[in-house]
Length: 281
Image (cartoon, helix red, strand yellow):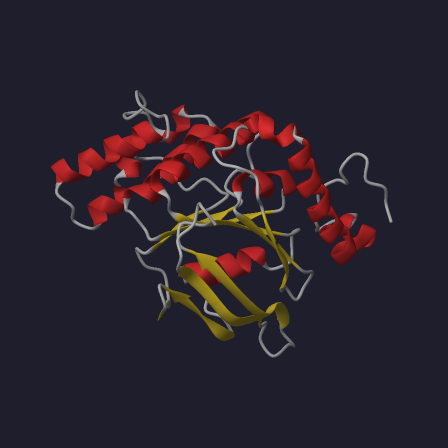
């Protein structure tokens, strides 16, 4: 692929995870998941709530130890959280008592980086995410989208090898979400980090990704990996193209075959609506 490197950056080998509650029989969230993510690739993990996609991302991040299997980063076992893996959560992760520039530079300060060097990096990423002029503002003075930009800038600033994003735009309104998707792609095109992005939104996955890994129902597995052959750079107008619609229908068919109407209408599942023009089987 033109946008990715020729080496494996992240490898999940036979990951199984069981949530255990005391002496009770545990719940198997993931079962024998193997996945490779290429250097500089933007990969989306796609599936409804409860399919294990967030659990898999947290295992890659080192926040959760798998019951079985292992994660490799650059061919070496990756255990526990570290500076090589940057995580952006759906919930706000800004520190309310710190300004924008203090939030962005927080990780750099913990590293003991000299102030002059730290300020250069802070300035770079505040500009890259479009927050110039808000350096001295506190999170309470920012919109939800602006606070999410702070989260992303802080993660990029300490220069992790991979960026792991757990539905970071899930709580935003449609307009802000669409704008943030475009801004994230613009930043990714400049920095070319390896990104694993969790979402249950078909359009978001297609718009952002080089490949989409569709998860199965619990216990989670990789049902299918679909390559997104749409050209880059991508603009929002791409979402109304015939090519985009064809991929959306393909992904929906995977969803409908795996989860069906019962799953789609259950209270704890978030499954996207059927694309227009696609009849129920």
